[in-house]
Image (cartoon, rainbow, N blue to C red; front, side, top):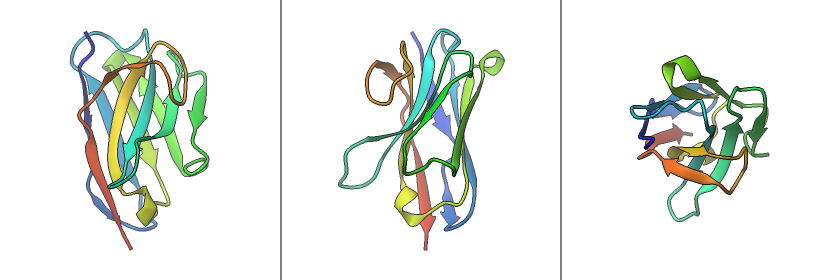
Length: 121
């Protein structure tokens, strides 16, 4: 019902910035909280950030707080992740998801295919 496609991942240098987008080509995302997760090689998928349906509330993992910003534009059916001061440990495949609840780990019903972010030293 909700098809999510991430884009924007690429190779960047440590300390640099990168913006990711997650667009829905199916139903509107306005009825869902949206989240970003990431998975590095050999590690479990971890929560990065989430945003409520209207963008009024956000959640961030401690590891990215102050560096990453999640936002959304429901008119464009798109959620964004602006990443600043990138570190090599931010290297991962980044996924977006749609949830009925604003949560860090539960309730994500739909997922995108992921986009690779690589941060060089």
